[in-house]
Image 1 (tube, rainbow, N blue to C red):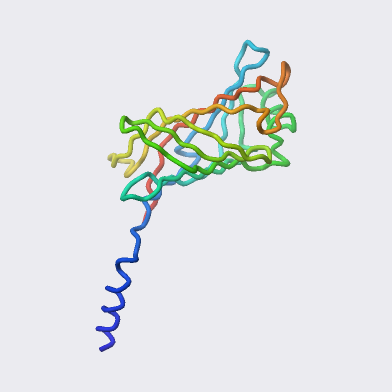
Image 2: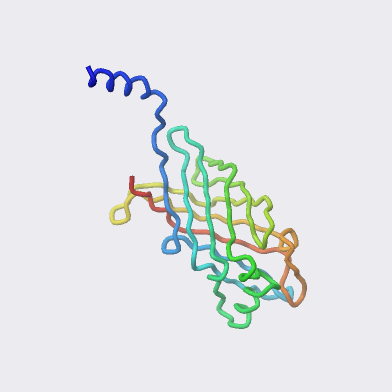
Length: 189
């Protein structure tokens, strides 16, 4: 009798059960986020963040896609020691006061040809604004030796002034080019 009740309960609740999401992890080991800004109107300064974590859920089985990433601001590195210190200072990222940068997607559209657009909210320097990335390459596959991965390349642009960051001849230009590339690894279930 107890067994029949449990079976009946299971079958009654089964239609309400939702399949688990296809969750992929983004880590510093498999994802690179870098940026470049023009200084003095002539040269480019580029840097990258070495510590990040995040999750990616690609559109499968009618589930909404999403991307959530958190970056440790102080993990920024630049080839120039002078610029490295300046980028971490209050003039730029103010890593001490704002230890994290976060991105949360609101909509992901794929074009069917390996590209697409990701629209979301970027929180930087204590301010949150819309940020759109163009996905240039998107490829999910089960590869020998790496398992189930989604490889991607994306880029976007922001204006420093939108986030309350000063810009000018000595601080660097207002427009920042952001480059994101890597492999998201499927999480174990």
